[in-house]
Length: 287
Image (cartoon, rainbow, N blue to C red; front, side, top):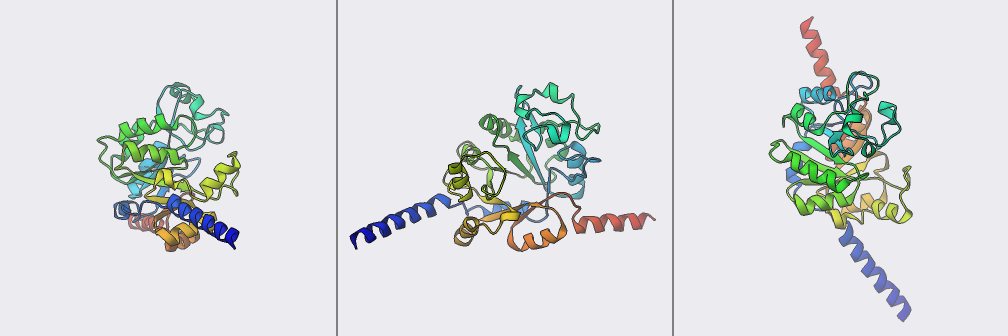
């Protein structure tokens, strides 16, 4: 009996510690309303390869449509913040190197999907957006993420537009929590055991169970739509009711489902129905 009581006591303590670890910050839900009214254009409003993802035309198109924008910032070897999604240049530029292994000057020799468009500087993208639509900035977990966070933070000083941050790396969110506490923070998450990645098993477990919320204390959780049934994510949502975002929605059917379950929708690969109908009506009016 004594052994059983000890086991129950240990289990209870571990459960309480788990509850404390996964707790997000729910006090700033209202501040996220700017990002929840319309679907968020992932890497801009693009149509590869004609209008490449994460290109100035893709961002200009999203601004013209009045859509919030999600983009990815990375740091080059010569400390330039550029906007690019993948860890390597292979898929988009046909180069096997990683962004953080290349200088900005070298990047300017490459183009996006054999178009004339080049990888833009973060500063150039901010000028195109000009605060006219909300911006969701993702800082990649690779490379010098602390320096990336610091430079992005400095660049956004005085920007004036609505901006929130998200990252797969809880340490990025912890950096902002300490150095720029007013920045809204979102933890990008998924079921890391079902994704292709080279993370150690322990790290996969901590990330999948959301236990590293203790470092990040995210204002919202941005979760992989495909794995939204993950029990740890569902438990955290049921217990704390945090703001949530769904990534990445690929069609209207997924969008309609996600809108019932998530606060923010991050999409690509299709034109939202209301925008498409607006373009069709505008075209008919010109005829």
